[in-house]
Length: 309
Image (cartoon, rainbow, N blue to C red; front, side, top):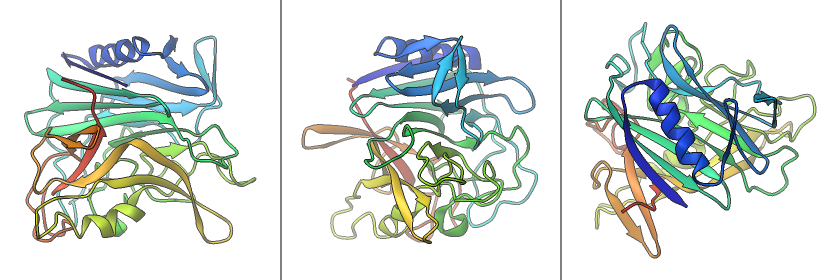
């Protein structure tokens, strides 16, 4: 695994930093497509409306263009705007996305996973991520991708870290890694997708998201006894015709964590592994363990496996 950090003054420089970090660590760049083995992801800068860096996975590349493109739409980090009042908990989507910013790229293998985290305006964070699921039994490639925002290039209607029990609500943001919900309209309210192809006639990419494991576990951390917080698995699920769900990805190098007893960017050691901690968006106050009536993204965080200094 590898860790690369730097600063960027434009989205183009940020994209170049991501591409350089990946190609120095086993990935190939073909046009706008980064690929390694059977994992393929397009990373581009979108300049119009709300400028951003956007990722979207597919199943191949031809002539520098992504093929087998996800039908869910891309995921992105960058400028967002709200046209409605946030509910449950306020995420600062009206805070300007400013340059210069610092960025960190966590690049892992076995399975391949890449996480780009940016830190801007001192206390704010966003991310994009992509990789390949190692979950057995998938009919698809297992390629997945995620980001802070959905690829809408329009103002979102609300911002909530806890809409519908932790999932993203319709046209909402919450900042959690793949914390999206299943929706029959596909790209609507999804900031992540995984190519599982489990059921004929259904979207090969549609997932329900990672909120199922996060919600109850996060509500019981950190420990009242010793202030420690468990690292919560990040599992993507797909709805099945039976009415049940199947795990389609369990991310090997990322976890959810309650950051109430941890600092932003703190490095924690568990056995032979080190993990670096980031807020979902921006640390905020909460009035109970799971964030209701709080602000910003409360005490919700990501922990990424870390191989830096």
